[in-house]
Amino acid sequence: MRTTILTVLAVSGLAVGFGCGGPGSRAGQGDGQTAAVTTVVAGETAEQTERMAWWRDARFGMFIHWGLYAVPAGAWPGKGTGHAEWIRDTAQIPVGEYEKLLGQFNPTKFQASEFVRIAQDAGMRYMVITSKHHDGFCLFDSAQTDWDIMSTPFKRDIIAELSAACRQTGTVRAGEKVGVGSQAVRFAVYHSIMDWHHPDYLPRRPWEKANRPEAGADFERFNAYLKAQLLELAQPKYDPGIVWFDGEWEQTWTHERGQDLARHMRKIAPKVIFNNRIDKGRNGMEGNTTGSGFAGDYDTPEQTIPTAGLPGDWETCMTMNNHWGYNASDKDFKTSGELISKLCEIASGGGNFLLNVGADGRGADSAGERADSRRGGPVDAGQRRGDLRNGAVAVCRDSGVGPRDGQARRGRHDPVPACDQAAGGREADAAGRAEYTEGGVAAAEPAVIDAAAG
Figure 1 (cartoon, rainbow, N blue to C red):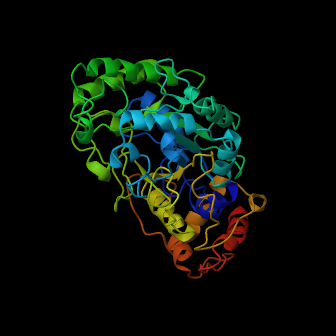
Figure 2 (figure 1 turned 90 degrees about the vertical axis):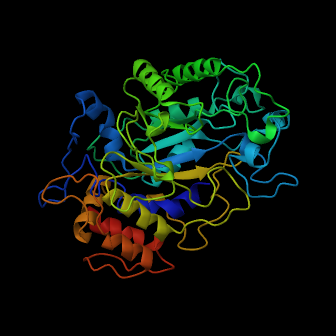
Figure 3 (figure 1 turned 180 degrees about the vertical axis):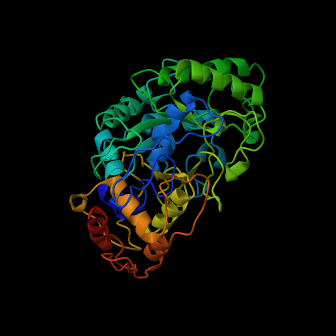
């Protein structure tokens, strides 16, 4: 489990994941050091600036899609093997049949500390996991429903355990200098507005309407349920830094409901960041908010990188293969070089990179069965040394990417030569750089760190 994530991500996290051109950081004046900067966006309040400071500096996070859908692992009898977290809908599984997965979910290999350690070794500074996806199943102990983790054979609150493991790493602070593998990781949750299990959520899936009529359903009751669960998640037991909303595109979720939920969030958790998917302003998978008056602290491009960045805060979320949830047959993983290039492009454009892992039904990550067969090999975490932010600045400075003239850039995109070299196998021209070859991206990492650490 641990080895493969390191293989694919470790170079990325060290090369540019902490400060290249992004808000909240700037290069020191000739000494290779960094100076903490709080980025203030025109028109925002002091409260907003304080709330967003750590996130703007974080740059790189882990996304975890996990739930009952991990049990079938993308396959359903007579329905093929191309499914994942949407399997109840895409394989058209009736509620009663899907509920049988509850008794099969027993991820005995799950260790919260191991997931957090993977994130640390990869250079990530926050972690977002599905507290509830569209199927309505909750990975936490909710007093609002029995459709949760405590009704499975596992009977352990996964969200609480991960939150506690993240807290043990410390506090994520803007401008903080920390070593790779010892940096704090901020905990966060993804919580779907859409809910295919709750009897009051509307609309029903088109294929199930005949056997699951909408008569008697009351969306206001569902809205109260949604708010009650968010209040549960806002408690110190979970303490999320972000609530990552999704599933807002159906007609039953309106701008007025989005505004109301945003007010609810500010009331129950004023320091919690939430994305633009709480409201109705998102421009599809491009993720940018179109128009004014919509709620959300940042935009959410999905599986795409804006070619010129975005004018405000934004975060690209992306899968490592072709699915968000675990799919046992999907081996089409991106290479280390591809991920490095994407991270560089996102960071230099002022965005954050949220890279997805789909855990399997045992509690292991989706990439854990293969050791980056397409490029590179395992990287020993013990090889890492130096300072994350110093290393990032050194790489950015030498490659001509990142803050210039002591100023942090926002919403701009610039070419990233060093990342192009890492992805394409060309020799880096900066002194002390390793030669990046098609078969040796991971092996080149120690030399990059040596150069960055001075």
